[in-house]
Length: 93
Image (cartoon, rainbow, N blue to C red):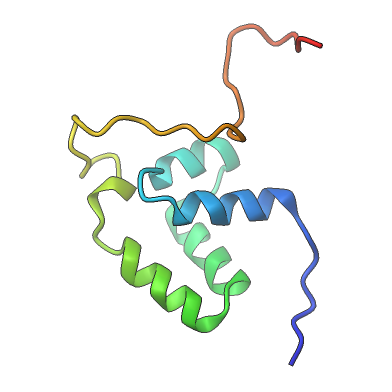
């Protein structure tokens, strides 16, 4: 059975952020306006069933995936592909 999925860089980035241990769901919400249940649904839809089960088992209850449960000594990880948020809106070329 072949899945008919198209390449979407935004969806791929959300999946990548969801797999990262130190990227909380709140960061995905801030950048892509997707709440945790919506990320879970996207992962269920886009991943193979076994991959989704592995991911759910990995993130369920993980304190680094939820800011309120996170230890304050854990720093923020920022991927080089993550959108820059600055006061200066003029892009540099």
